[in-house]
Length: 172
Length: 172
Image 1 (tube, rainbow over the protein chains, first blue to last red):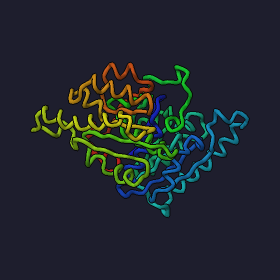
Image 2: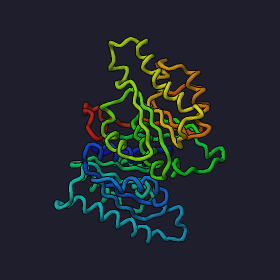
Image 3: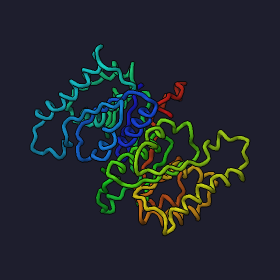
Image 4: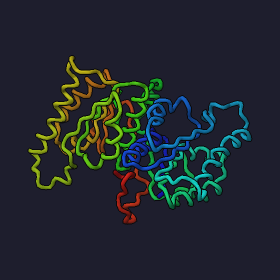
């Protein structure tokens, strides 16, 4: 099954963390591959890394918008290591996961940092044997068509708009 | 701060579980008060109950729609114990929590199983000192006005509509 958490609102990654907790609680094996986060995942990491049956891989530790000086070629190369990891998961010798979470891959797709056709082909393979969650604001038309379950997190009201700063434990 | 996770889509509770994990990872103290769930929270419970700094209270273990034979007076009484617990949290002797999650309380409000004015008064007190997340499909106008952060989980595509059954580890 292919699941997409999309939209401009909060909760795309946090809902997938909730799904990871739910799956681990059932004794399932989970793989989380994450792009563009480091300190912003500090809280979750602290707990997740202690739990059994979760493999966690993080690539390109900062969001592209904070990487002003990095040219897109370098970024594509960095994202390529995430794609290689994904490719590994499709090999017949790979460990089998019940749930695979690909956090922020929609952003990499949107910004053309990963090749859409390659990504779609990998997702097609993986989602036959595992539940796959892809998160990130936008999503490509092909993925939306392929997906079984799509939820849009819609911002109705946000304190940023009233000048409130991001809060530790809430926003990161 | 008052946060609402509303809407017909998936991810309201799972995103708040993600928030709990994030908060606990920062060493914060968290209280989860839940209505209408039991087996449907089995996976999450298995993990959450092992974590430090989380107090978890569950009331009315089944969703009202599965409690056909229970009259609404009995349901109101059952929900009243959840309200008493909430009241306890506002007392000056209560343990101080950084995050309080009130799962499915929007549903209890919508179905008039808890008194809106009493609930709003409690939330007003609690959200001055703690971050409070209230989840559930609908939300009252007063709560929406009070809230700092509101996210609507919107169902874009759902496999139920194609006759797919709820899956362990995904839906519950």
